[in-house]
Amino acid sequence: MLEVHGLAKSFGGQPLFQAIDLDVAAGEWVAVVGESGSGKSTLLNIVAGIDRPDRGTVRLGETALDYGDDDALSAWRRRNVGFVFQAFHLLPYLDVEENVALPLALLGEARAPRLERARAMLASMGLTGFERRKPTSLSGGEAQRAAIARALVHRPALLLADEPTGNLDEANAAIVLDCLARAVRESGAAALMVTHSTLAAGRADRIVRLARGRLRTA
Image (cartoon, rainbow, N blue to C red; front, top):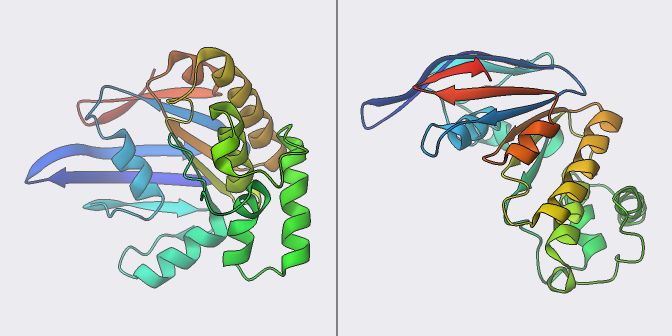
């Protein structure tokens, strides 16, 4: 599903990584680990079409990313990518249901079906009854489960997670990871997660380590 080949990136003339190759199958969850500053988040941003590589290609299914066309990349992300962040990034002025439905609104889905889909996703995350609540009333674990529902509501082919348990205690992290694992399996998305957490990495199907500019099996 996701194919990364020969990816290289430098900053200020200093190579961050080079010749990165990575394949992620549909329904597979891969964790990228490594020291701070090793380039994990930059790798995620390049795969998402947010940052540009110096060399190399990224392909999702039959589509190769065209890093020269910002509008096309934005449209591609809206359709194909779901994001889960450490800080949740739920909009405080929208209720939980509206937050989850937002990707569908951006794709032009009518209000009634997008809210129905949002309620179904919240139910799959164990959040039935939370639809009318504002994000500020949620616990960290509840907010992250809502964020996972939002990331998957438009059925993306690619799920990208950046430190998804970084703001959670161990108990809430375990609940969120259970939801994430089930969601990846049921959605069939290719999932790529960067993390410092051994708990989170241990739940992935496969772990790779980014060190000294190279990606290796951990």
